[in-house]
Image (spheres, helix red, strand yellow):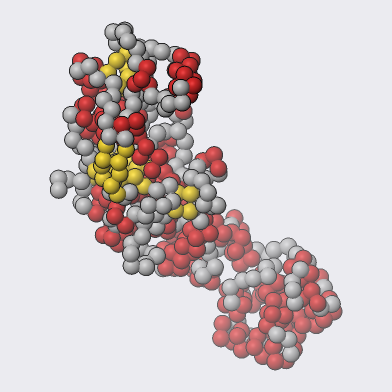
Length: 475
């Protein structure tokens, strides 16, 4: 096989959501698997839909995930430029060849005329094909006029690296616009010229393009281009599994997940498994393992449902795999403001306690604040607690007073705290769900926390006793 060259060719119309990132990830994995090249190309010919800053957002999203391109914006390469609006010379060169060979014609009909022709086809109970309504004497093409491809209909059979062997009848082949009146190409024309000029060997894209394959094949033949390998990925479905995930349905930017403290390696692992089955039952892969294992023939045919709960679970699993030093480095921007002034050693003690509970890093402020500041008392924590709500205030007060006495002469090492807490269970005759929950609420203002003895050891003796006294006074 010649050098494998794949590409990701987004339009700069806003942020990248998970569907867009997976459209980059799969061709990137193929390129890396074969030690080939991955190209980033910006298809910016739809000026009406372009959103300022989108190219930077696309680049930042891919860079965060480690999906780095070998050629493209900011990197360069032998086959640039990598913005379609800067490549008009190539489109016009190939368009003129089609025009000279009789495979293109000027079509200046207005949308209203085409709608009348569509209505005529419906009246005649036949499919609307523009090739059935070609102008008898099209004007000579000049810049500023739309240029339309003149198809030569035929049936096609082709192989898709994911979907298998496919066929289509000649009714799937029709005329389509090559160059718009502004001189820029349509997607149908531009991507084929660019793939040829950039020596792309694998065209890997979404399933929505498969219906247009017969038209593309017809154009490949008219241009005399060698066809690359084609692979059409199944859709990522929304949470209900009923329709394709989209921005209009609330799909978030990948950079929103970055801001929320999702790890890039967890996101890549999650996205790789949306439609790809490695076949060995594994759920967690390093990037190198994914590159080594990935193949298009293991990509499923049906849509993959986007389940954010599974992403959260996977992210928590990756957080637990980090060393404490790695976790500390990644949490730099997520500490609560109250942590300012505390040293690295203390913060790492807090992180060691919380690592098992963190699902994403932006949870850190809420989970850790009680280790840095005395939180306001929240009486609802007791009144809404399933067990504690059964006790009157005097009973709860007595339990805390007994706990205070036994904790005052403890050295607050974890082992000694566990001994004292277990001794309190025996002394009071209360179950952990009552006694430990009460002490936990008094000292952390939370109904759940890491193991109690470890939490109190980090909070420290002075602050723990002070908080218990405060809770007693309130009761």
